[in-house]
Image 1 (cartoon, rainbow, N blue to C red):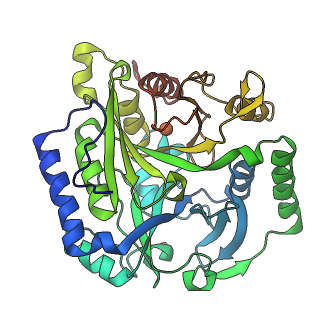
Image 2: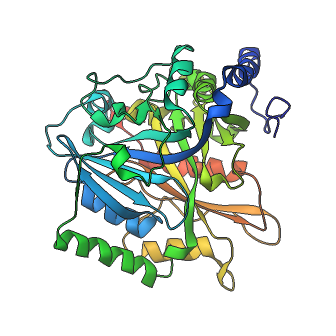
Length: 413
Ligand SMILES: [Fe+2]
């Protein structure tokens, strides 16, 4: 695919600044050699509160295809590596050993009124394969991208010999890591000493994994389809351009979600045949900042989310295998009803219609009490090739907004 010749989809207008620099970024990626080095995303990373590790692994075992593969312990964290049964990216979960642990995640979360409840919980970012780690860092640093350096972080995971991370983005607060090693090579990851859950903990985890099989949902929930980060209205273009600068993704397109006064902006990796091998990175932003919103009193759930929790990952979407569970019941409806019966609550009902036309069915779960992330399930019916429909996104955004309000004085966010 020639990304320089690609015409983005959607009706959200970008500025002349965006168009100019998007083209320049693509061209510099090629001339600097970055595009030739970078491949696919190979892991997602989530940081938790101390004590939330096991319950979060249980939640993942019920709600996602991720299963614990190996655990490590070092002087600050327990680190869990989870995988699916295929070649999709790994999930790396980091749990501090002490409830007093503090790093930049906690310091950042403490600024925001609703993020303070779980000050160590945050989606950290992704890791991308590169053919040459040093060359990648050298190129990016020559483009003013900052990296964590050994000795400058409380968590040594960000500064290993074989994985290096950018500092949290000013626009998204996500990091992007790079590695040249196969994540199966655990010793090269230098994560500390391997350890095993005790038999009681392992039993709890096995029990949930069995439950997911018995409910008949495990084989229907595939890999991650996309991840959506929420950013401030005024930083939409910067957030996209920054991610394009440090990755090999391309700007697929953006749609205006007028009813919710927001836009959805999708970026994809053109080197993979299946998005689940390197999921789409979505950025959502309000169309107007909160301080002018009172002129028109338009909805602003996306801006409110950022004011309440900080710029951050909002949800991770999993693809549900398309098909009918029984007549009139699509697989996604079945998955959701099974989870519902097992104490997983959702924000509203499944949205979207699947009849004889290509279309999407989607739903948001309630926020995880451990990761502060929403899980989305999406079923693409009749070969629907897009990422969303405007109507669905408007309903989903509205449903999540009700759950993310913050009462402050007489202002209800
Ligand atoms: Fe989504």
